[in-house]
Length: 119
Image (cartoon, rainbow, N blue to C red; front, side, top):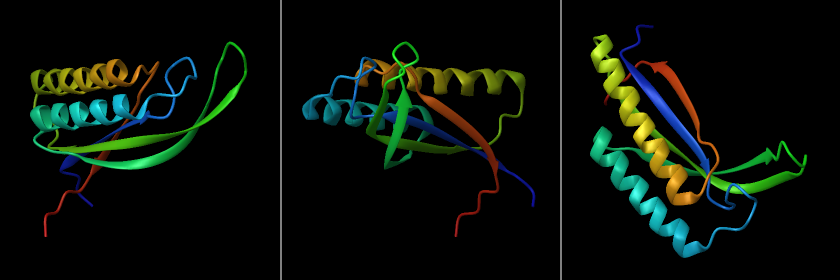
């Protein structure tokens, strides 16, 4: 099957901050609204679904279970090195917005080659 696009998933927690403290619901709601707006501005649209995940604090070994989200954008593959750098910049800006708004240490970014077909 021929690939004609990239699926970029950004996976992040919304239950706890980077220190393991519970995030207030109003902060999460505002951050998600801002994240959706940032994705729309940079990519023209996105999908966001709730998740549940775990992470381990490397310093203490403590395991945390929390709610989260996976934000997905679909984009055509870059046709040049310049377009690739532009796309990377858009993704990094979105990662920064997520980390700042939700006080996260990290955001998982998964890029997959896909066959896009609108029906």
